[in-house]
Image (tube, rainbow, N blue to C red):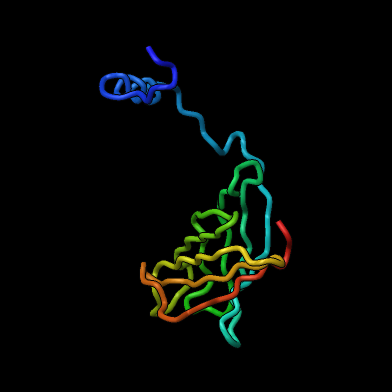
Length: 139
């Protein structure tokens, strides 16, 4: 058998079943948490964010955090995402008001220490909405 050949058919099915049978480990047991402060600037409005992430993953895995001020329905609980060459933060509204219930911030790294991108509410991207998300604390 060629060791460089790609597995297929029954071999793949056996490998998948083997992985499924492995004991599950809670990620929370082994991960150290680090924090960063980010801001999204949209004209005169600033969304302040505190993000908790795992520095041992690449890209950094976002574990949680909160978005405060400058956005309807604040605070928002950050529920996941990643920070690397690109950025994605997913959040759910924790505050009151007639606002959207979910928010997604996406961006692409720009030197020095910034992300240029956009955000969407309830799964919809804002039209013509380039936002600059800058880091207050370098990761």
